[in-house]
Length: 267
Ligand code: SAM
Image (cartoon, rainbow, N blue to C red; front, top):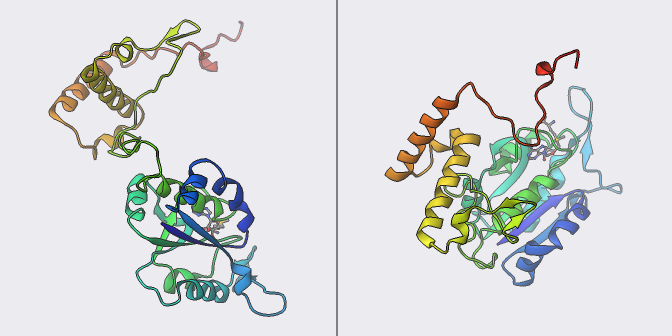
């Protein structure tokens, strides 16, 4: 997979791309990233890349010419390459979108700054517009890194264990269950016995039930689209009955304080 990233701040990428899995993916040739400074494609002595917004108002807008020039020079006529504009107004980046993008050989990412980019970039150059969440960042660089990271770990051979992404949260519509490692007992808190049992089938079922329980408790909306077996549905029905029985009674976790309104004023 090759990413062409257009940015005014290429240095932002250095740390994340130079460590751990993204670094190894580049060393093995599975990932290549070309950082293109948009300023290099701006004309004039001062290589200006932004200007005042037409119609007034605060902030600056990124000019279209350097962005068009950069993409055209980089792609040199190659077609079929997604040209993605990072924007808080784009379609939401999810695991499903990461899977979709991982099928491409090459992707262009355009990082905006300031008030954003001239609308003509979105209308006549970008083929896609992606947001990493419903909040506004100072620039598209962190969003581009999120996409590079999530897509790269899906590429064959990037993770040591080829099945590692299979049970990940969101990979198949569920959140993943809890993980434990040594020691078996830490400060008196023991690892669930089934994980030490050596009974592979029981462990697989326990993990599935934990994933179902977690999704039911934290993101029930995901269950509507998850692939569920008859056994899963039975388990979920049991969780629903349990919830109905305990509704109205909400135990506090061991570390939680009661809400302030429940604390007597005199105490
Ligand atoms: N004025 C714009 C708006 O309200 O839609 C926001 C501009 S933002 C300060 C500057 C740049 O950061 C955007 O052009 C985009 O490239 C990037 N950006 C900000 N939030 C983002 C998000 N949630 N996802 C992807 N990119 C984002």
